[in-house]
Image (tube, rainbow, N blue to C red; front, side, top):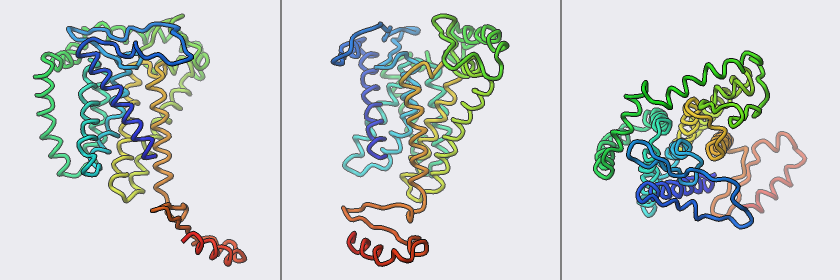
Length: 333
C-alpha cells in the first residue's frame, strides 16, 4: 500500500510538472508522447484559455479533470511529506508543492472547491503545532503565487464573485430543465447506465444529474452511498490505527474521496477516465487501510526478514494441531 501511494503521488507530480510547463511556455509535451502499438484516434484541445491565462491539462482530458485529480492527490502528498525521514523531507515537500502550484493553473472553480474540501478534512485533524505552521505558510504561498503569476489569483477570485454572469454557470443551470424530460420517463431506474451519450443528446456538466438520467433516483442514492462508505471506511481506519502516519494517511484518503464527491456536482466526472479511475483507486485504498488497521493477531507480520506467526486462536480451535503449530512457530523464529 505504501508503494502504491508513493507511485500515485509520483504520477501526480509528473502531471503537475507537465501542467506547469504548459502554463509557462505553452508547450504541450503530452503531444510528443507516443505509446508503441497505439495510434491517434482523436484530438483534444489540451491548452485552452480563460481570461488571459492558459488553462492546462497535463495528460488529462480537460482542465477541470486536471485540477480535481491534483486536489485528490494533494492530501496524500502532504501526509507523506510530514512523515518523511530527514533525507527525504525536501524531496517530498517539493512533490507536494509542485502539485499545489499546478492546481490553480487549471483556472477551474471545481479544482478550487475540491481543494477547499480537502482543507476542511485534513486541517482540523492536525495538531495545534501543525495547524499554526500551515496558517503561517499559506499567506506566504499566496503572496509568492501573486508575485510569480500576476493576475492569476484575481482571475480565480472572479470566477466566484462573477459566478451569476458566467456562461458556464448558466449552461449548468440550463441542464436541469433539459434533463427533467428524460428523468420524468424513467425516474427510479433511469434509461440505462451509460446510455445517455452526450455527443448525441447534450452535455450535462453534473455527474449527479447524469446519474439520475442514466440510473434513476436509485442510482443516485447508490452513488452517494459509495462516497459515504468510502469516507467512513477511511475514517474508521483512522480510528482503528495507533500509528500517527497511518492515521494521517487514512484521513488524506477520506479527503480525496470527499473532494471527488463535491466535484461530481460541477462536472460529469465519470466521463473522464483519470478522475473516475483515481476515485475508485482511493476507495480501494480506504478499504485496504481499514483491513490493515485490524487486530494484529489476524495477520502475519514481516519485520527485518523474520516472520512472526501468531497462534493465539489456533490451539483453542484445533488442539491436535498444537505440536505442529509449535514446530512452525519455532522454525519461523
